[in-house]
Length: 537
Image (cartoon, rainbow, N blue to C red; front, side, top):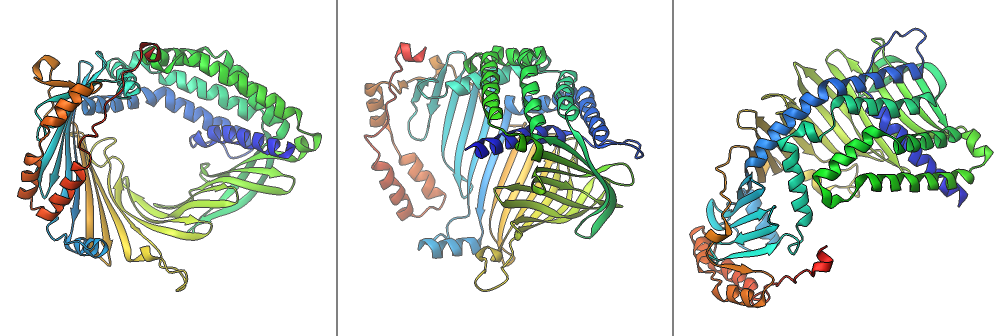
């Protein structure tokens, strides 16, 4: 039991240390006489400076884009089934699907004056089958729904009764952030100071390990490097964790951030009180676990953090490992050697004896990446990924484009044959800063023939949806009233939906099958139970 507690403590401390070290940005320093800790301090300084200088501008740009999207958004989701796909589905289901061309969802949404209005349409073969209007009034705490092809009446329920009170609080918080982000979100300088404060706690408790010359090579791309290692022994891990926790208990900057978060979303409770309780409980657990550690544990067990420095004084690799004596258990490896415009890449994670890695190489010129990579699990290639013309800022800052082709290996023998090897998946990504849109097309191919494709289009240039006031809705039924729900059920009519399906080319037998399944639910319209006042509070 003691060993289990010890190992759990080490993993927790390693995760905390790794999160700081891996987050650190590349840094440069004079190669001569520079230690591991010197490099980490430079990297930490670079990350803190980035937050202080670039965070506010990046955040403002992101919030402007999010605000435009939230206030007037459009989304199209379309599944197109090609001839080969219809044939395959027909064989699998035993049904004639020659009539099916595509299925789509179209959504327009608008958010204004603490109200969110959404119009959702379902289409088959480019013909509308039915639509649904939904409106959430966050100030009034009410939700309204109408399916016009089924009934002109509206259904209503309180957000609490509908189980959406958490959404209400979230949307109110988002509205506050978009209205005045600088008054709600922390400044980059504050985040930089917090990162520097806790990062230095980790670095100051590290000891210098080995320093050797070593070549790292990924996919035949290698660089001669200096390997530097920093070590945190078990006793220091406990000290670091305790110092981080106790410092956080009196950290006024963290307190201010949590106070603002509580103010914009009171439903979350007092976040400061919750944070303090978490810190106190963690300190108690830490002290209890530390009491069971032995002197042998403290002397033999340590966290190793390794970095590889190339001849240009740039960090091109990192590794985090948990060590016990001469044994080493690597938990994370990142390597990125370069040769001109060509670079190798490895990101590998280890857990409980298993490894998952993404590795390969690519060529980058003028911000455009082309490369081939593989997803590998325990040494076996699970998927090959080809990247073509990927540019993270192809159509404006933050608007990417590129093509990704994913294929699957067939296996090395008949016994290891992979049925997925006959298929490939192609993802085409594009975007445009002009209308703040993103387009993604996912295509499934078999032996080069297209089976189906799924396209997603999201933009901030929709037609907009009006939030209808309750007094203008006409008949409104209460979802908590059995009498109202009986009246609504009595006037439900599927004739329009059936006619729309026929016009879209859906065969009568398919319509009858769907209608039969829907008729089985008649008389089962759910009535929401009223929430007692005491429970609601």
